[in-house]
Amino acid sequence: MNITRGFTGRPRVDDPGLPPGQYDAGDEWPVLSAEVTPDLAPADWTFRIDGLVADPRTWDWEQAHALPASAYEGAIHCVTSWSKFGVRFGGVSLDAFLDVVRPRGSATHVVAYAHTGYTTSLPLSDVTGGRAWIAWEYDGRPLPAEHGGPARLLVPHLYFWKSAKWIAGLRLLDHDEPGFWEGNGYHPRGNPWEEQRYSGD
Amino acid sequence: MPGRIGVSARTASVWRTATLTEIRRETPRVSTFRFAVPDWPGHVPGQHLVLRLVAEDGYAAQRHYSIASAPDDSGHVELTLDHVEDGEVSGWFHTVARPGDRIEVRGPLSGFFAWPGDRPALLVGAGSGVVPLMSMLRHHRARGLTVPLRLLVSVRRPGELIYAREFGAETTPVFTRSAPEGVAVGRMTAAHVAPIMAERPSGGWEAYVCGSNSFAEHASRLLVAAGQPVERIRIERFG
Ligand SMILES: Cc1cc2nc3c(=O)[nH]c(=O)nc-3n(C[C@H](O)[C@H](O)[C@H](O)COP(=O)(O)OP(=O)(O)OC[C@H]3O[C@@H](n4cnc5c(N)ncnc54)[C@H](O)[C@@H]3O)c2cc1C
Image (cartoon, rainbow over all chains, first blue to last red; front, side, top):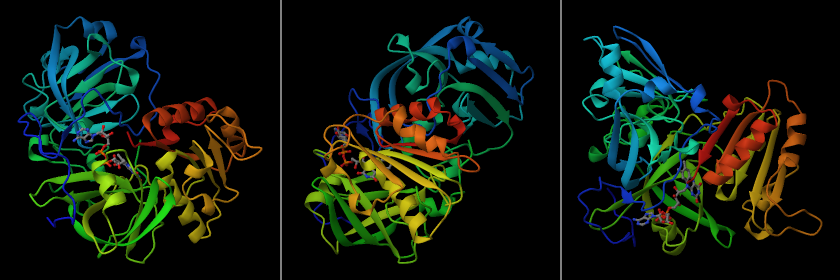
């Protein structure tokens, strides 16, 4: 790294909760999406899991809500450098959905896709074991459309582009198939603690 | 929704040292910074790069900036930066930077907001959101392209209109706080979009919207209401 003449930067914060290169956005929650925010009513929302599973299936809004509720409280990290702490999401653990469809042993990756056409790819192991949710509540209220409502994928231990807004489904695969940003130079996994922002990081 | 071009993973990952060669003031709060970038792999209008400033203790700040210049073989790229109040990176550029300074860049990134100059382009921007759209307009001119291109740009007052001298008949500025004599004041409305939509170029418009989140929401809703298909609206939000 070449030092930039006269650049000191903001005072360093020693915050063990903050991944490298991130800053605390406080109360702000910037919106980043490349598509038009869809006008999607809960009654029109569906969520499907197929691909390498024993029993592919589609849930509607009510069927998804009949699964056991699960919440996430903690931080989220965006690749554009902001992190947000103490966020509270409510929904259902992805494990509850996967238990129903029963992934085959050969499944290693998933492609998550949105009702808008957005896609993102993830290792299956990153969306199992209580680390991923389908979320429809934020701070005890319905998730706003610009943040992915009526429901989004939530994978808070990875950069937030993996947490597909307006989630429509997951397809289980036996290989990695790059999604929207992964095909645009972004990292296949996106672990903020290893600062995996772009491919090659 | 597919990207317009592919982006090489290798290109995205290499840091290059860029040397600042020129600073040009655009408005009281906005300047253009020209860099020589050895081995710049070239870009397509609409793409952005990632820039990094490094302090002596190794602390680094990274930000994304759209490329303002048209693709050419000069070995240079231009960025246009708004001076954000207390901005860590834009503050350094506007108060410390001078020609000869070296910084690090990587990219270009994002094939999604790219415009190769093929389809009719309907460009809608606000504030510094006009930057990637300017690269498209400049490309259109430099290549003498005949495919239609229209630019709607929203700005608070005339003195804040970036690139004002370069705009021609393809551009309609919209002034939200104060306007020159005889020009209406107010935010962008269906009336600005309708005449452009009515042109119905062959193949239809590919729309590119860039600006703050609230502007992007507003402008994209206007386009959808005017009949622009959602899958042909590409949005870049500067946050
Ligand atoms: C794809 C893309 C393209 C872009 N293109 C352009 C462009 O062409 N021109 C342009 O001017 N901008 C562009 N931007 C915006 C740019 O990336 C920067 O966000 C902008 O320049 C502000 O950076 P900064 O370091 O000056 O300000 P920052 O220091 O990042 O401050 C911006 C805001 O963030 C908050 N903030 C940031 N860091 C901290 C911190 N450590 N502690 C507390 N608060 C903090 C502050 O509230 C402040 O108001 C683009 C953004 C994206 C995503």
